[in-house]
Amino acid sequence: MADYRKMWEDLNMDLETHDLLCEALPGAFGDVYLSQENRPEGMGYYNFVVSEIHGVRPAELVEAQKKGTKVFGTFCVYVPDEIVFAAGGIATGLCGGSQFWVPGGEKVLPAATCPLIKASIGARLDRTCPFFSLADIFVGETTCDGKKKAWEILGQHAPVYVMDLPQQKRAKDVAAWADEIRAFLAKVEEVTGKKVTAESLAASIKLINGKRRALQRLYNFRKLPNPPISGKDCLLISQIAFYDDPTRFAEMTNKLCDELDARVKDGVGVYAKGAKRILFTGTPMAIPNWKLHHVVETEGAAVVGEETCTGIRYFDNLVDESQTTLDGMINALAERYMKINCACFTPNTARIDDIKRYAEEYKADGVIDINLKFCTLYDVEGFTVEKTLKEDGIPVLGLETDYNDEDAAQLRTRVGAFLEMLDA
Image (tube, rainbow, N blue to C red; front, side):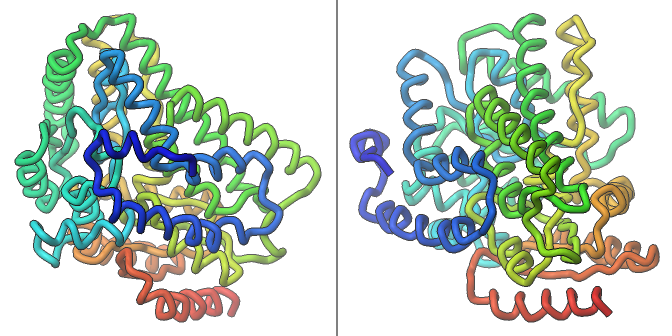
């Protein structure tokens, strides 16, 4: 990584502690990613982004702030980035996926809180992540009780705006979410000092749809009998999508997909013949949480998809681009975002329908249902998910984990046994 210490100092980061993270990340990334054979050349861009994860993009954001641009730190796929970009702001994803930040979160949160929440709060309070240090405002949402209370604590240290997500999907709930987006639009205009127009919102809808289309194109390669790219690499690309410049991200991902087209024509794949195809479902895997993908793929299986917020849920539906009025576009945003099937909704049969559909589309031999420890929503819903899949004859394995590597051997044993069962 280049020398960004002056920028980090200006952001009032704890450089001594941050250095420890910078020292650990290259080794972890190398073990998981650079150890792979036959990777597409286009992965070089994403390798670079990770190697400069706390440098290049934060530096771009700081330069934009010097010109008056406001940066909105978001934590969830329900927050509509389109509104932020339409007002001349920049939205950047902030979910923490590292055990490094968990102790900082535990200073103010109960230990029995999911690691994603603890890491997100810890990254800000311990001043060890530039994205958390530079955000002008944080945008939370009410997808779980732990997050609701965490935003109150975060709000003691920085500006926070919380979007109230409905818990059901009736017509009145979609209308309520549209009203919530309108309220968010007003807040974004207040922060940026710029008005959102029908023209600017139409442009930003196309901008973010462009990123979604690139990811859809990428994931379609995973449906093929002989995928030309690994599940680990696709996870990394999806994680980077949350904070990279959306125009550049779409361009580089489409460029990679052009290479993958050529690999398919040449019969180039990355898995051994007969590798079992696994679909992940459950809780998000924020960067740098690569543990389960690494376990499964080094056991000889292929992770062909993720029914998660850092997977297919993130890009599965596009916003209708045919609307011409501001009100029509906001309604289109509400309809699109309410199609995301998070475990926070009740009833939530649509999510189970998604899992079964993805299992068929991605030709999965089995499903691994993943729950981050202390995530009550996905843990409880896991019972119904696993019961329904078994009734439909779809092999399923439920796993609970966190960001620590202490359970890696146990996970490897359970995954290995599941794969052996699929071979039987």
